Image (cartoon, rainbow, N blue to C red):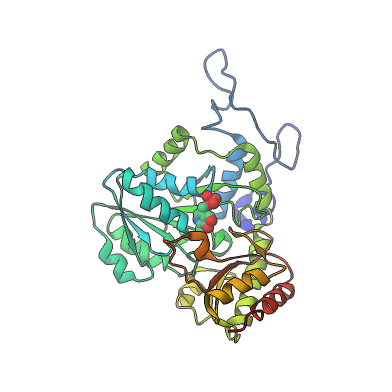
Length: 385
Ligand SMILES: Cc1ncc(COP(=O)(O)O)c(C=O)c1O
């Protein structure tokens, strides 16, 4: 698309950057399935592409869209899953490197770090990143290489002040990576706050239809760490297939509509149930009662996201009854799809989970908010406390 610099991200993503197929003029991008590319008689390649583990035009097009969404992101790499993206960042570090990791974060990352961070030789320290003094005292200048954040953080939606943590980390010579899966670039563009790397489970909101497993890493600059991550992906091979990359660019065309709708509905649901007699607490950064609300209001624009958790007044049994009682919400893990989901996070995460037993995690979709409230209303009444 020519003259794109003045256009908003919302416009650019709706048209997947408006790139046409140069051969046919097709609006929808072509899927390049070839694993390899012809070498010419002089030894060169048509577009410098050799083998699809390193180079695929369909993936590259989707990567350009995600890099654009993250604003100042200079480059993006797709991975086979969100976990492949997250672990690529850690695996690009060296044995002995110290890493400060948010205490509250997606349990899969925490589990991987506990099981494999040690064998990889990285020194992982879990810290409450909502407490800036704790972050500051965890830093070891010269050996802390990375601070890993997630905001809002699974499954209780703690908010970390990105600008403040970046200031502390950078002063100690460390980089900052943020899992931006839940906020999405519609609501937060972490690079604008000084963050160095942004990670996504593109399986969630970016794709948005619960039918693609994918991950992405976006960098603010092309530096040696980025080159190591690229080299890791190429040599280890955790790449996304071209069909999935194509589906992902299609899903992202409606990203703004879906995220805004989910955010509006989540806020309405949070407000409706905040003072409800069957509910002990609603955990949602959009509520002024949330301890991170003020920071969220500063670093999230246009909404507080589609994820919230509710704690039931009647405890774990009440939560189990609500889970059985819903009809419209789907009982399933994951998040960020067009359909609303409900799950008991503690059972899903297992014995190491820090999620309260009386808590249910909700991923709000794009259905009528009235229908969603009515479904929850009748389910929470099933087992009065
Ligand atoms: C916040 C967050 N980050 C990363 C992941 C991992 O992504 P994937 O399931 O695509 O590997 C998830 C998955 O639930 C997630 O919720």
